[in-house]
Image (cartoon, rainbow, N blue to C red):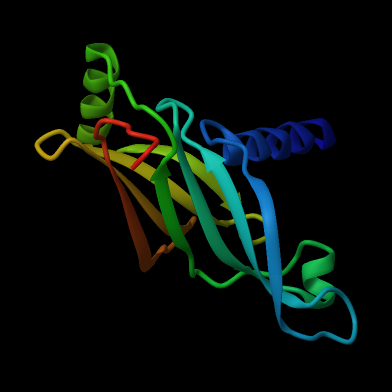
Length: 166
């Protein structure tokens, strides 16, 4: 039974990060001082789109401190903000354009995911493609096993010619 539990926990841990880009923590600001354990803070993380070169996103989200936050048992609030930008030329091949359109028809694809509670809650970024407007959309939202949150934010990257001098 112990082996089965370990396998289930390992599978759950892998599923929380499957398909999502690794994020780099850029920095944080403290919002509430805590006598014991780390302060509550807002964390800023960056990640690059795994499929579209030269697109990067920055996510800000709260992280709960205190003793429960220090040991990983705290539940972070369901707030998040996102900004995505084109950092260089973007070339969408016909295959990539078809892939993006297909993914969008299926509800988009997860490009970022972070755990916001010990087991059941995550914040994630889903990428969608608006082919009529030649625009990639990034939606940040929170979910949990039983009930998600309607709190969300969106950022868009219009695919356009790249001119580094402008």
